[in-house]
Length: 355
Image 1 (cartoon, helix red, strand yellow):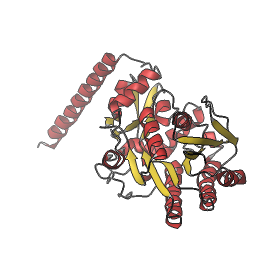
Image 2 (spheres, helix red, strand yellow):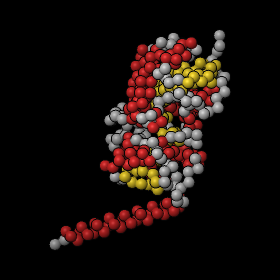
Image 3 (tube, rainbow, N blue to C red):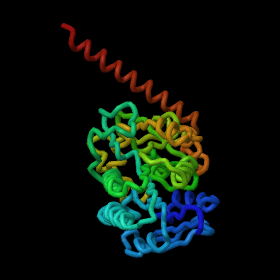
């Protein structure tokens, strides 16, 4: 009998999924890999059997059974409507697709492990959020729109599946925002804009997960027993204003009431597939606690959040419109000007109030 894991990877044509699959190919304890996607993978995969299919296709259920799959790595959840053919199609593929995949897994007797790539966006983003989210924390306001809502629903269905199939280990990985030279993410696109949209009056804390750490964690939990839910992010935080300076960009402050309008304008311009929900994230930010990842999985991220973002700038060769020193100088001048204006208004108010 052939030894080693028999792995099914959904969404194998994705940038991150391709990197993870290539890493699995190099492992001696992985006997066979099957990749499912509607697109052909761009990664040069040597021993992965590619199956062109949507996860909703009955062929996936047959593949699970006939190939005696024991591990499923689900990575086909889309985060942007444009690449999915619109929001309605995105939800159909994300949520209904996950439900049908889990139904197929329910009837796969050889299955022993299900790994779900999820997102820290399931925690939401509010002014009442804790300093950092632990895996047991619930969002103050559950996600109501877009990718975050889809991911939250998929996690619920995955946990229901795990309760029915107690012989299957479920691992859920909630990643911070991905950055890296090989990944096309919302944040890499955001910082390719000449001016970065911000919400006026807010400077949120951001966390990033470097692609190398993401690949390492996904590879580890696919090939070893680590059931449970884990936050994944680099150490530390980066304030949005710091990220803008590091990229040599300039901020474009948007008053809060006009965030939805600006999101629509940016999306229609074709420069960035951004939702209003993602721009609202730039108001409060989000920080997650990674203690469980270190203690239970035994993985310490190689890249801090700042180092990961700096690597994005370097790898993508993001060139600032202004040199970093010029950006800092202009920032000091603007702050000094605003301080003078505040002082003048204060003195004017005092003189008007005198008898």
